[in-house]
Image (cartoon, rainbow, N blue to C red; front, side, top):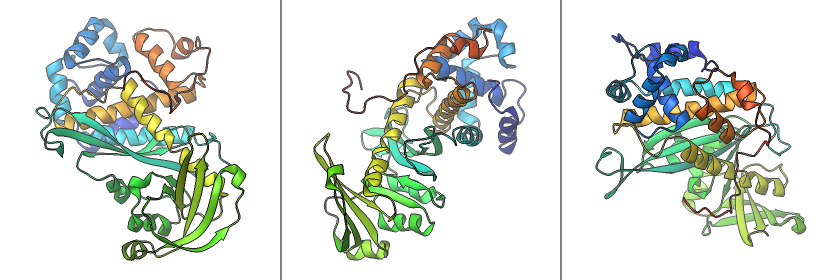
Length: 377
């Protein structure tokens, strides 16, 4: 917890009057309880209460000042503004992105590269009636923009399941010169044109029925898998009205999967093979979603209100960022998964964190093989 910026946390609490009229169990106590639940993968509020009370003599030194009670924690999750923890996550994002700014992601590109995607979190129909999705289902969506330098989520938006994925693009302030990688679910020419007007670049996939006018073709080396590199304009009325400028269309053959892919971009300078490789890097955000769902507590919730759900998700993101910050500041070569596992069993030990993590030998990757089959999904 010493790696957390306490000053920024207090500013977030004061911004929303989080500790107003509280005599015990402050927002910091709430955060510590929920972070403990994420780090040790607790199953319920009763589980959190039992485990923390069993270590009662150590809680004061961990920063707890209030008495841990499941009823108090449940009430705090329901009524204390979730934006406190959303803003605190933004402070951690700024710290983490600064730490990972010098990392390489395999491309000779100085600009930032972001991957955009959305994941669905299914909820119980009877417990979460407010989370509109389908008639017999309830769900929320986690819209995310992932900075590929360090796989740091730079922007997160939580909505109910009926909200379109395109909703994310309406809330972004695009960074000039940056690349935004997205799948064809985000293919909306009016919104893509906003990226172009912001002097940013996008790479996305074209739909099969995409109609266009070819202006001219560029030379390609077909041995690299690039079948064609064309400068085009949309041909239908609405697509042309939404995007009145030229586009670049790259046709690529993925020999490993024997699949043809067509990419659209507004960048005319990159080699066509680099465009294809940029889109392939979008898989990092899929692995990010898989990681947080497997190793953090965001598929089962300790409260049923919208405020409690958003509080839990934002604190889970804070924990992910905290582990990433620890990894970088201590220069630990191990994966985030291994760090999380060691912390989960040594969380109340007085052993220095660097000493506990120094026993890790193999710097395994956090990523998994995307085509590998899973016994349990």
